[in-house]
Length: 82
Image 1 (cartoon, rainbow, N blue to C red):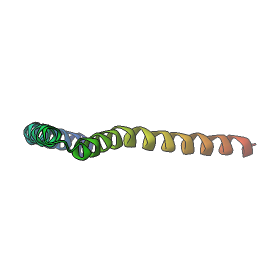
Image 2 (tube, rainbow, N blue to C red):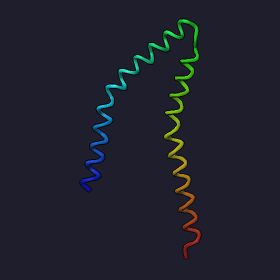
Image 3 (cartoon, helix red, strand yellow):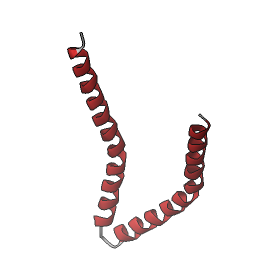
């Protein structure tokens, strides 16, 4: 049990420490998109939006697939039990 608690604490600490770097990069992305839009190039902004949508949808899709497989496995196990 102690190992699991230490693992969760370590993971949370790593996420917390990485938060500052992620905030700094947000301003850089915004500046790049603003500069490209002002020069008439919208492909960078569209690519950034697609990347955001991909990162938004991927975890939900993964959880949905795992949930569906778990449900199907549980249903098939229940069907054949005597």
